[in-house]
Image (cartoon, rainbow, N blue to C red):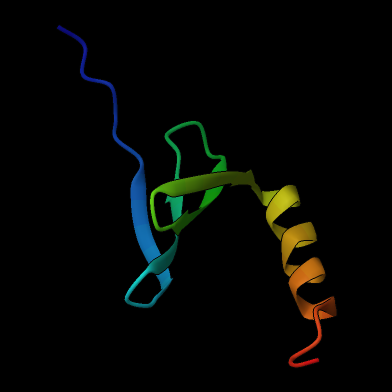
Length: 62
């Protein structure tokens, strides 16, 4: 039986309710994941970079 390699994961940041982590996939792609309570959003590297740009544009307080 051929074993399928598992992605290597690493937590980037974590709070009580939220987490951001990445997975280095066996095919060389890195994917990013946001866990927001019971919802997980998945990003490819280029999407992650755009998301980070969006977050930087958000005001700190209104």
